[in-house]
Length: 59
Image 1 (tube, rainbow, N blue to C red):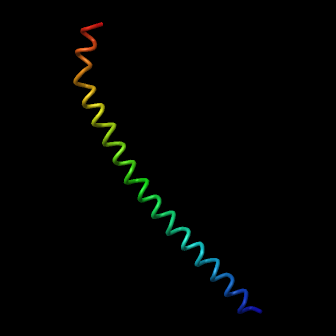
Image 2: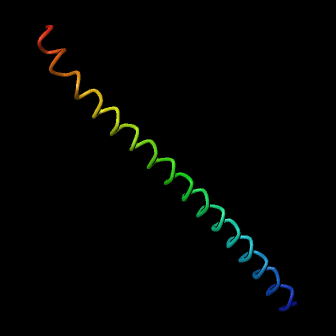
Image 3: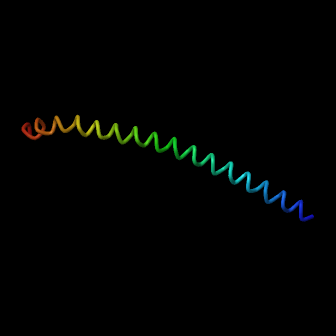
């Protein structure tokens, strides 16, 4: 009976480790995508910075 309980605990721990590995992989992907989004926003801000003086003089 004790072996059965130990095996169940080990099985659950393996499942938890697999889930954690999956979450880590998802987190890495999200971080990569966030970096791309941040770079795009920074690029848009740089580009729109070129138009601010023109917009202000036309108002």
